[in-house]
Length: 163
Image 1 (cartoon, helix red, strand yellow):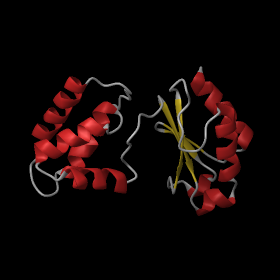
Image 2: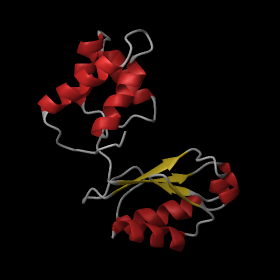
Image 3: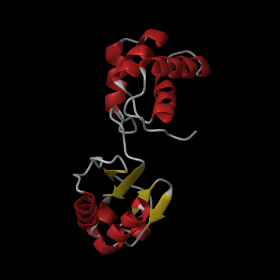
């Protein structure tokens, strides 16, 4: 299912989305994470209203829903850009210059790591590992992987996605 990032999802739509996801996931002790994943995949992030609705619909305490959503790095509590750029900062990438790649991308886009551009086109994330150590340093934009990057190459790739 494709993610759709919408900063101003109407409350009625959020209720409908949560209700639909909850009805699709088998109830039980392990249902909370799949429900959060399903809602995030449809909205693009987990707005407060959605987490409150999840708590009501699943019977889980709101504190537990918020706790799970904030504990796991896969969950987003704010909208992300159309293109999410993940720069690997695992050991191999770090040693090969991931910091300089991240700095170049952030400078190019005018954001801090973890930030989203004002136009909503890009979000830049630093991640622990992308599993491509032999290609270090590596970044991903959506499902596309780019390896053996220099800061200049990274900026060029980002510009191409901005067109």
